[in-house]
Length: 403
Image 1 (cartoon, rainbow, N blue to C red):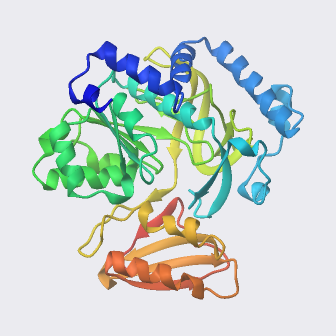
Image 2: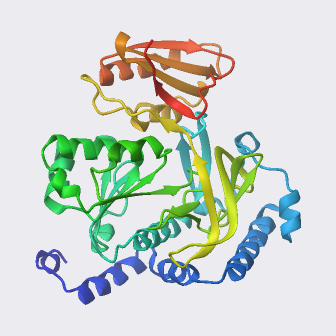
Image 3: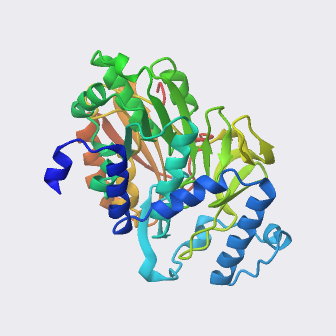
């Protein structure tokens, strides 16, 4: 196999090899074909599909939903409803931990079938902004799971937590058509590329920003790359919506139902058979408009006026990398039993980081290793502040202040 890959493959040979590997690994192929077809379905047909999938979810969890009226009468779900939930279909359940877009650590089970589904939806999203088989740099959480298979598809996965100068060299050499991943990590990478004098390598590159509110990133990155797009979702409902080349944030109706209730977005995962994320409260603001025809030719529900949880972009001498999810990800993975909620405040003028926590335990001494780790990776002093309720910073999870 290595000798085969040592010489360039024709497109047809590469596709054939990809199909063989796909059948024995991730299994994206059938989903890719299906989702490219459904994208052009009439709106009514897509709504019928949603209801069909919703009934299957209802049957799994005995929710008694048979009609849209039943669905709309159901009380929304919040994280607290699912804490300690015993996963259905455990053989297909993947334990997942998140720092939470709400700043509340949460441990849940993710359905294994969502791995190929999400990958296929991402491929479709890239195609709607112009990609055929051009190179994609995908910044992922942790070490790549499907590195060899991704390479066959022209996708280069790299750990977003370890962005460094080797990433800059890679971008300057390969000039990717799309960079996809966590918004803050991509922002960091783009700034590094420009600082190294390789900004021209990004002139035709499209960014596909995920996991954070993108408004501030768009403003600061405008003019440094070719185009900027976004995908919307959370860990529980990852591929809720994807932006097309005309800037419309289309709900991926084949996998998700999106609603606005009291000004906040609620999502339903139509493929989760491990935990019922039904009318699931996200905390994000936005208006779902049904049956919208876009200039791209797709008729779908769309999300307008999206305001999600944000992290201020900030870098300083001593920081191993700019402010981002890397700073708070240990909270859920290592300290979720101590902390029920958090916010972070950075005070550059005082070289200080304040960590506000709502504790689960009487003592917070267990956080000492984490506070030391923050200091080592930023050069700033840390201050732990125990509170009964989180400070109200609107949509900010990590913010930079003057004092």
